Amino acid sequence: MPVAVLADLVDLTGTRPEPARGAAFLVLLSFLLAFAFIRTSARLMRSPRVPWWPGSIETKGGLHIHHLVWGIALLLVSGFLAFALELREPWWQITAIGFGIGAGLTLDEFALWLHLEDVYWSDEGRSSVDAVIVAAVFGCLVVLGIRPLGLDRPSHTLPVLAFALAAVALAAVAFLKGRTVLGVATIFVPLVGPVAALRLARPGSPWSHRFYEHERPPDRLERSQARFSDEGATPGWRRLQSLIGGAPGEH
Image (cartoon, rainbow, N blue to C red; front, side):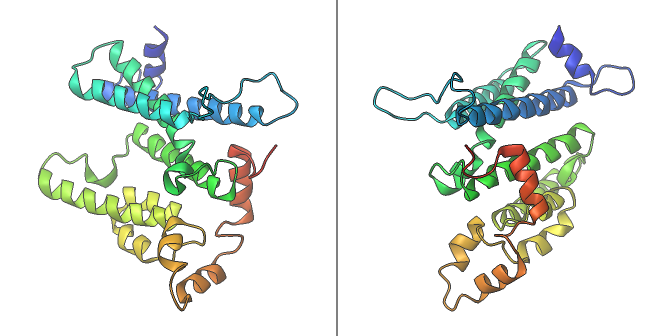
């Protein structure tokens, strides 16, 4: 069946991959396709050139149901089934695809997690594109066989787990500071973590909003603004964000 053929693409030696690796490939592929579809759909909804494109889902009371909701539902159902059942073909492929689609729909509105308001087409909404890029890079590295945080070592489980959790915490701090590259590097090279966590946060990042903007005197905020131009992003990175996710205020 087609999903089995797609899973086989992971294996470069001619033999069928283990389900875990095949599932990772399917999660990554479905994640990228779901994000591409939903982001394209969102851009088409705002374009006057395609007025026939379906709009957002709203209840009779005017409540806008974000696609984030459907993504979370898919993540929960697929994740629960994967943990609770001993899945065989084709069910592990189906749950992997469902999980990837859910992740794509959810991370496309990652900015809503941070700001708790609809900032999809604002400057703050660019963090959704950052999150998708980070997730895609992480997924690619895992599919290629690179195991982050030393989790490929079966011995000394508790020390390895504690080390992994510490690295994840440091990576989370880096992401909150807007230091995306350092956050990804921490996941695969944990020794980068302390450096990443101590670096200055970018202007406009959640860390800056929480700790810098209310600081008196605003020393760290001023240093951050002086360190980074264009709200913490280089023009090249801005162009990449706009290419992938559309420019803020795009119509």
